[in-house]
Image 1 (cartoon, rainbow, N blue to C red):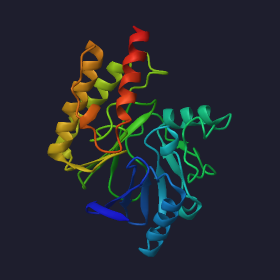
Image 2: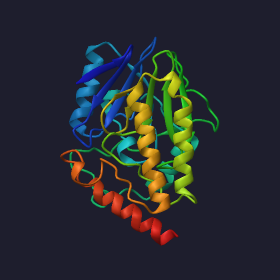
Image 3: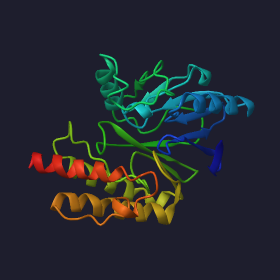
Length: 264
C-alpha cells in the first residue's frame, strides 16, 4: 500500500525490516527510490502504479547493499541510477554472484534484476529527470557511495540506511579507513539540509517529521561518539527498550563494539 507523505511523494513499507520504497511523481512519470524487497510486494507496487497511470521513468539505489539493489520486471526497463561509487561497488561485489543463504536473503526475494545500476558521473548534483529537483548528497557512512536525497519543493529527505528510529548507525567496518569520522561527516551533511526538510524517510523504520529528523541526528551522533569513546551509548534501540521484533539490533551493536576494538 502506498502512503502519501508529502505532495507527490509516496512511500511503500515492506514487511522485511520495515524497508521503505519511495515514489516521486514527475511530469512524465515517477522516480522509484530503493524499489523494495519481497517479490510479491514489488509486483503489487508495480500494479498500483499502473492502476494510477504512473510509468516508472527512473530508479535510484541509495547504496550498494542487496536490499537496495532490487527490481521487478513489472516496473519496466527504466534506467536505474546510483552514485558512481555505489554502482562500481555493486558491480564488484556481484561479479561472482551472491550467496543468498550467507546474506540471509529470504526465499521471497527475486535476484533476477539485482544490481543493474548505472553510476551517475561523479559529482552529479541531481537525478536527471523531468520532475521536482532531487538533490544528491553523497557520503561514505554505512556504505561506499551512499546517497541521501533531498526532494526539493516537497521538503522530503530520503535518508537511505540512516536516521532510523529502530536501527542504530551501522558503520562500514569492512572497507572504510575511518568509519567513525565517515559517519560523523555524513551526519553533519544531513544536519546541513535539515532546514529544507519537513519529512524524513529512512531506509528502514518509521517516517518522521522535521523535529524527529533533528532528534534522530542527535541520537545517531551520540551513539557514534559513544562507540568512538568506548562508552555505553544508552540508546533506546539497543537492549530491553528496543522495539518488539528488533531485539537483534543488540547483536549488531555488540558486533560493532568487538570489531572496533580489534581495529584499535
